[in-house]
Length: 348
Image 1: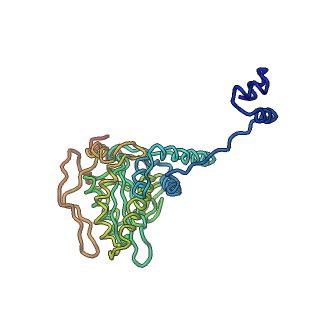
Image 2: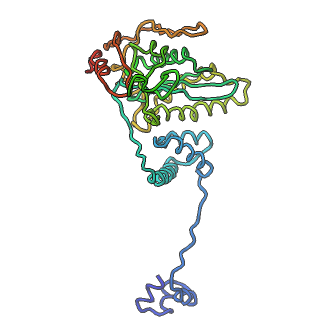
């Protein structure tokens, strides 16, 4: 303002009167070629104590975005008393930074969306290693993102099969294909019978035939089953770690049985959250997907080595058919066998 008034022809005396400043102050400021900006003041934010946690959570889930309301609920449990708007402004800066850095990476992330009832994705994830390991079997339906998890102390073939049955029972039906990476429980040799014709584990082949088609991720492209991979991280960070902290000062030893006693109530919450990608609740989308799932055969049993048979006791009444007596070859891409499968179910 001082320089502006001076440029308009006003004297130092006139400027000092107009602005109510001492003439020496006006004179000193006029001698300054550039106006010195006031130093920026930084004010403490209620979010400061939680910024490291927020950045870690966002990086773990990326490229999926965790809804701000979910992070808000988590940090409120840790003591945060600020607003959602403050949190959203901060998360935007983190996402902008990640996008900028990853822009240097030429590997474009492509999302593969699948139709209703078409695909499930399966993985084992290690929850605890050592002498008393704990593993989680995880299955996620590709269309609805409805997730299932079950904890075990081993990854034996019979356990693997019984976990599939538990997942099918939870969903109320079976997807037509299930995607895996190079699990020994599934594949013994890639391309054993020619390109895309793989040698499947005999026990698993006996189990899966007539139920669903096993499919394999392309070599070095495990990201194609990213839906289940991302849920593995979500399971560890939002279920296991908080529960472990909660039980830390109790006499309870964390075992698969203890985890399974908590997991289904947690899954109810997880499958009713707004999914970061679909922007909808998985359970709401499962209602749409349900009629496209294959019926579970009555009395489906996976024999357990320890004699604990896992049997589906209730029949799921649906209009679609159970796929039986189809001579299925196991490919990683759509082929005539899959077309036959869809035709058997009235989808071809």
